[in-house]
Structure formats: C-alpha cells, structure tokens
Image (tube, rainbow, N blue to C red; front, side, top):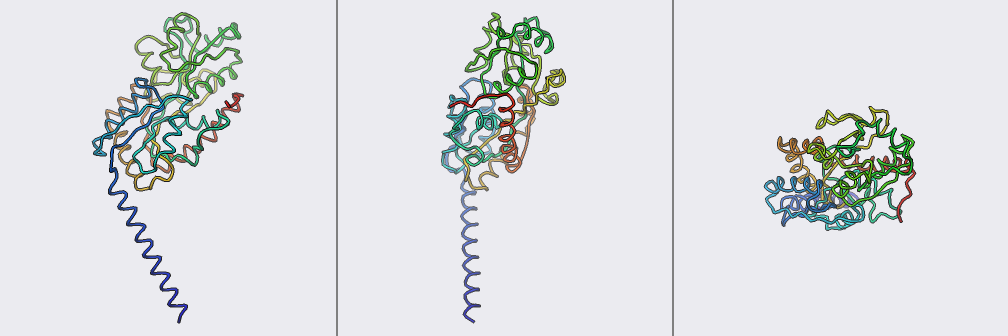
Length: 327
C-alpha cells in the first residue's frame, strides 16, 4: 500500500514538474524578444558580407517587432566576433551571422580556437549557398584557368596571389597543390585592398568571396576564371567551376544565423521561422543572386548537422593543403 502511494506521489510530482517546465518554456517563447536584437558580424562596415547581414537584419526587423542593431567586430580571422557571440547570454537577443564554413575552418586553422564551435554554437538556420572564386584583373592576359595555370608554372615562386579569409587561404593552397604551383600567398584585410596590386601586376590572381567577386566582375574590374564549387551556381550559370576545368576543388560556403548554445529551443525555432520568411522573399533571392549566391532555407537541426559535417570536412581540407595551424 505504501509503495503504491509513493509511486502515485512520484507520478504527480513528475507531472507537476513537467507542467512547470513546459509553462516556463512557453512563457519564455511568448515574451521573446523582450528587447532589441543585436546581429553580430565579423566583417568590416561596408564590406560585401556586411551588406548581407544588414539586408537580413532590415527585413527581419518588422517580423521581430524590435530594433535590430548590427555590431561589427572584425579581426583575428573572425574569432573575435565568434567568441563574443558564443559567450553572449543564450536568450536569443544576440544573433551571429557568419559563414558557417569559415567558422568550421577556424577550428583547424588555429591551434587554440577561442571556442569549440561544435558545442558552443547553435545554428538557427542557413541563408545562402555560395563559393569562393578565382579571379584576375579584367585586363589580364589570362582568359581561362588553363591560361593562368600555365603561366604560373613558368613563374614558379615569383608568382603571387591575394587572399583575405580562411576559405581563400584553403582554396589557394588546394589550387597550388592540384596544379603543381609554387605561387606565394599575400594576405590582405579585405578584397578591395587587392585591386590596385592586381591592376599594377604586383599580383597575378586572387581568391575572392562571391559577394565581392561578382560585383567586381560585373563592373569590369575583375575577370572570374573559376568557381570553387562542384556545380555551377544558379545565380551565376555563366561562370565555370574549377572542377570542370580540370582542377578538382569543391569548397562549399554558406552563411547562417547562429546563437549561443543553450538558447531555448522555442526561441531558436522562432528565429528560424523569421529567418526562413526573409530568405524565401523574392527580393531576397534577387539580392543574393546579385552577389553570386543561391538562397538556402533549412531547419535548425539540418543547419546544425551541416556545421558539424563541415567541421570534420574542413579538417580534411586543411590537412590536404598542408596548412600549419596558427598559434
């Protein structure tokens, strides 16, 4: 009899606890957002990637019913912004918009990354798919990837190329290894800083993010010779991939909205719903296509799985390229 009574009490207490938990989660979701949202970006104001963050923020603002403040925290290859966002209060009011692929790469490009992205970050949802691009000055004599490769083999270590992001570094090393080149990497802060050196001939080519590359290609400043994706992008069907030109490189790049791990699931789901509405807009597709990328809608679980996969894959890329992690 006593055992039966104790069992019944346990059931009642468990039910009460579960009810309180559900009620608390429901209350958290209903009160969100209770203050302005802060979108963190690792890119400098006015940069091409910063433009994407601000576009998303402006269109999510009426959905959230709150002001969205974009905070630029550039530096340390994105690690400053990543650490800041990961250590923020996990209440959904701090959202990190960044390239998930770059975040994954940094787990292997640094000996001691500031955070473990696999456990410290929760991906809310994806924004787009894109790929870095190899480009030369528009007046360069190189009309194809084959032309460039042949010339760089002759130049050897006297040839040089520009990079300004983790993905660009990986892409540059993989291209050199696949083509048997000895060209020298020259690091810059942003893509715009490379243009004068390309024009003067101090640089032979550069590895660029698609947002910057496509804009410069269309205004006649750069000539894109190859895209580092397995297939041609829907946004730029006229641009050939490096793979179809005999250089087997596939470096998928994608932007996503992320929050600190531990953010309540109802809040993550709410942010995902707002983000997906924005990404599904016709004007968003037009905007993203204009920067050489394709819209990509996903659920939090799918996006998180992609981050974990990329953390593993980028480890393989770094090892393949024989890149020594930074201290």
